[in-house]
Image (cartoon, rainbow, N blue to C red; front, side, top):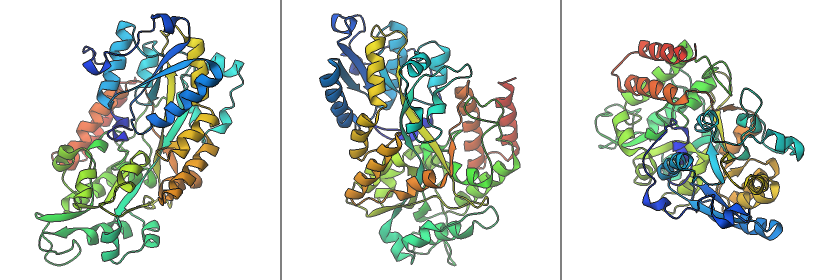
Length: 453
């Protein structure tokens, strides 16, 4: 998700017809001389933390192929706005980092090159990637629009001192469980970590939930949407619930199911009891990182793309624990990933394909993994990333255990995701605020199902 926060990876698709901002003025149009002869291609990404590793890949690629890659990096909002405008004006990059929430609409607009024939012709081995990632980039007709780039899961970052002061150990955090009846050992921990302005803990007599100094669990404003990646999804998914009938290309949705309602009711209870901040606070902050660093949160559920933000700072000693085990008997995490797409309007499709295959190879993904920023999609490169994180003294097994144990669930991919997200986001926010009851979830679910009839 990852210049500011890859939490934004699950936002709705939006086609923005605004003019290209000044920051994009220097991008090369595909019709220029260098671009036309195939010697130079443009590549866009939004994560500044990964740019140095990809520059290494570009330098090695140029040395072996003679093709120069001009890498351009933009902030999240400018990135998607620039792409949309570039598609319309014919100045989009040859290759760009793509996101699962965006690519269905790009495919429907004819902006992405179908690479299925090239994959078959060149004998690309799709088995080198983490299970399930390659299938995400295919459409209903068998077209393929990307090769896996990386993946992410979610886990719990925690304030090591607060955990120790509360009398808990890392091993205990790894064994937590939750349920919809009493919240289990997980809610017990969250309550004990919550402290009011008088120093009274959430599980002690006299706790004042109107004057909370430290919340046991943060609420991410970035995650209050139809995927709930860093908010409610680890709980709903570990209670034998899933978003819809299938993915990719979900066509029937389950937001009205009783199991989803009971999970969200328990989650709302954490707010009502004062253990988690209100929706208004979460939306005002969007990203809870600053609040965590300021000591306002003991635990934060967040994505692996945030490792360097939490583990790479010196102010608050921080470690990672996996998400709690749910009523299903397993823990759960969304499994999200990126790819690199080729613009269908590129004048350099052959050169772009060479670059995309290099980006998707172990040769480049090893470099990315050794940078210890994200988890590459290639299985052997993931192992190198884990080793690189360990060299920094960061134990990130709270994220990778989900992959190792097979407890990941794929992000829903669907046409009309923008409408699905807008409808459910509004309903979920309203419910968690206490402005509506559980019936509003069913009503919203009926509305999104109507989109697919």
